[in-house]
Amino acid sequence: MTTPSNPAQTEKKGLHPRNPHRFAYDFKALIEVCPPLAAFVSINKYKTETIDFSDPKAVLMLNRALLMQFYGISEWNIPAGYLCPPIPGRADYIHHVADLLAGSNNGIIPRGNSVRVLDIGTGASMVYPIVGIKEYGWSFTGSDIDPKAFDSVKQIMKTNPQLAKNMECRFQKSATDIFKGIVKSGEHFDLTISNPPFHSSLAEAMAGTERKWKNLGYKKAKTNELNFGGQNAELWCEGGEQAFVNAMIGQSADIPESCFWFTTLISKSESLRGVYKALKKAGAVDVKTIDMAQGQKTSRIVAWSFLSNSRRTEWRIRNWKA
Image 1: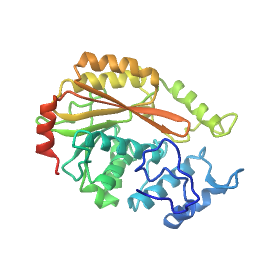
Image 2: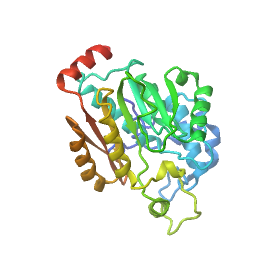
Image 3: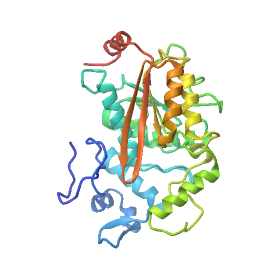
């Protein structure tokens, strides 16, 4: 288990016990690996070091430092205006789905590149694959519909050869397809992961940003920028996250033998009722909900499988190393 470099640091509530980001940021250590971060660090009213989380450049630099310190990423950047996701939450997802696999493997997390993960809408940042490759040695296939995000991932792989060995990019040409055109005939994945666009419109996305500004202590937005960035396809789609996930569930039923556990992040609790209804209609034989919490934000992972117990045993013996 990772321990904080400063014993006085307190552990954040809610984060996974294997998540190395569950302690307060050690800015001294982060600046040592990423000196440019120093320009963005200041002392807050509680007399502790922090950054201005309303500043996209500061958030980008913090992410770069975290990826360097904890995951050995030498160079990392994303195009201007693209989603710059909070690393702790992304890491939590990966550690929770590792436990999900362990639950089907006598409590042992399967490791190594024989474990194959499909990251649906991997985005420009490639954070999920970075964490999964570093922590568990898994192999990833990332899909995305945005050419610029696709190119960004390729650049991250180019500058970090250790990632390129375990990562493949596949461009999704269809705006309505999730698995078709990505999952090849006869291909199998142990996991699919997804962080779907959870807003139903740009206006709803901007309203969500206003709430973030208030949580950061500002009465109104300093700019009309999203502090964590994001393009339209990353933040919203018609019908919001429930419509996207319902489509994913329906399409997963077309390839029931191709994945051990299909999973997705669900941001809004009100989406769950419709998601469960869609899973029942699709014929999922097992459904699990994994709660996650980070600060004031609560979300959950919904996982489903179409495989019977006997098929899971066959899968485990065939694909996962002891």
